[in-house]
Each structure stands twice: as structure tokens, then as C-alpha cells.
Image 1: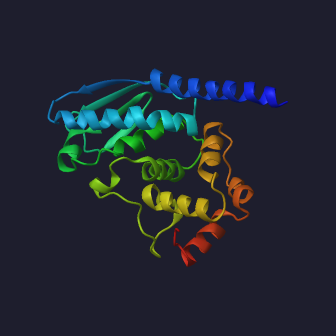
Image 2: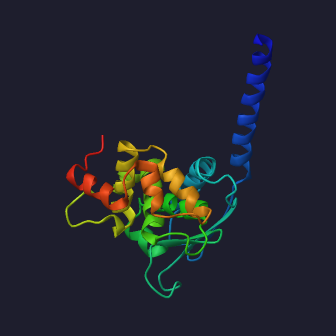
Length: 223
């Protein structure tokens, strides 16, 4: 048995390392800046986030996510209206205007590539949860949040868990801290499989959504 363990462990380790390298090597980015208004540091920062963070998100949440990514930078006028960024298919589109006004907000890319990882079927779950998970991921994996002045929204009594984005993200982080450290991963998986139900919150934490929010509202501190 001792000899067998010596053989098995290196084999398992090799398989894990091979998987790690494979995921990293197969991610590609086609970067298109339509108006060339942003400097090369923006392209460098976006690509760094994709190459460093996207493989981590694949391993954590969705090993079968798309790997040929496209980034399009375009102005509000080219988009027929103001926007920040959005993800669709294999593409993340970012507003030139937003980046010129917020030149350090590179981790909006972290939020958007999580949407590519999510790849939920239409109607799989509530939009507030989809966006909350993406901001939860930005908070956890972001490379430049502090420099951008970005952080999760502190709790106040006017909030509700359906407010989405940073408010929902902080709520998710608190639940993981208090009840189930795998909550977001399990919610994400259920949404991707089109199996999400509000019953899942009780199964994962012992409390329904409203009960969780009530406890959170009484003591929203995250250790």
C-alpha cells in the first residue's frame, strides 16, 4: 500500500497540473478598439485580467465555458446610447466614454467575464442574482478594485437583496461567511443547469431568503 500511494500521488498531481496548464493555454482574446481613444495600458490591463482571472473562474465555476473571447471597445455613439459594459455570447463590449471618465475601472472586465462563465439559459433565475454573483466575483477576484475606488456597498436599512449588483454581492458574501462557504458556487451551478429555485436557499443555509435578509439586516458585519 505504501508503494501504491507513492505511485498514485504523483499521477494525481500530474493530472491536476496538466488540467491547470490546459485551461490557461487555451484561452484566447481578440481585442478590437474601434476608435483608438484609450491608451495601450487599458488593453494591457484588460488582457491581464482575462489571462489571469478567466482560467481561475473556469476552474471554480465552469470548466466548459467558452475560451475564444472577444473584447470590443466602442463609444456611446457607436452603441446608440450610453453604457458601461456588457457581455453577450463570447464578447465583452466596453464603453470608451466610461473608461475615459473612469480610467482605473479595469475590473469591470472581471464582472463581465463572469457573465461569460455564467452562461445561464434564458429565464434560469432572477437578474438581481445573476448580477449579484458577478459583483461578488469582482470583489473576490478583482485585481484593481482599490485603485478604482470600487468596493461592495455598505448595508443600510433602505436596501433589499433584490437591489442587485454590489448590494446583493455583499449579502452573498455575508451568507457564505455565516452559513455556507460554497453558497455562490452552488447557486451558480443550479442557474447554469436551469435548476434554480428559491427552495435552494433553505437547503443550503437552513433559512429562506427573507429570513436570511432579516438576520443580515440585524447584524451585517462581515468578519
